[in-house]
Image (cartoon, rainbow, N blue to C red; front, side, top):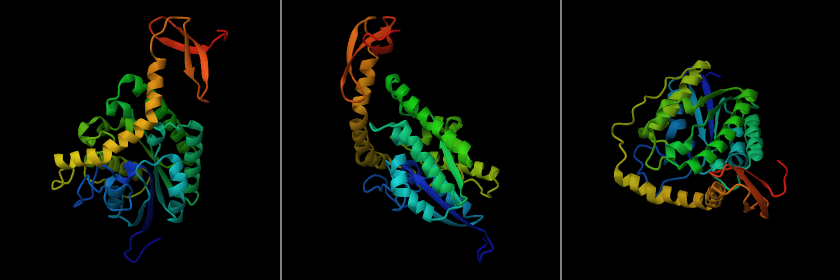
Length: 307
């Protein structure tokens, strides 16, 4: 549709978690830290989706709706964001969520797959172009020890596998963050290394702009360099760590603590043939035999099992 300005009208909806909220890239004039908001609707954060919407606005009359919420999982998107996104009747819609799922004790690959496929189906039913992403090794960016990084990366690979299925089924454009040079640049990450900095958000917006251009949408990528007059101070970084990052880590510790402890325990070397009692996923105890070479456990099987 062409508007009175002579430009085409473009409706853009964004759903997801804190990355799409824009956490790490405060809106110019907004203090970072105390009072920081948790949604993309309160004007505290800018972020890649807003930067991209503004870039699109140079060529189209854009109606932008950011429904993302910090901490959201795929289930949260389905239950709390999807209906409003569909009601926006988007021409362009971004679905970037899943990392929070990997860090929850409620982790369920089957539920994640069902939620992402359902969300993609609803979001594209009206003809919207879908924007998705494949995730990088987040544990490496966070500097996690190997015994935590490897299980986390296995979960991220599951998420990426679902997004591969989403892309194969619903098409659209996507950005593979593992191939994005900015991911490996420390300057692209905020002090907590959990969220992109302004530079990182700009890099992500530019990556999506390049993919959209290849898909036939006219958009000049946002500039790569951060605002010269909006350097984040150490006081703001400290305020954010105290008010945002530390509480976040506390919440995730409650989720991941038991999983991390169990992961570490199951990797402790035990003599071949020794028995170790572990707690099953159902909550009961299971007497199992460690099968390995004496230096580490290669497999754990129920006592008495053949093999």
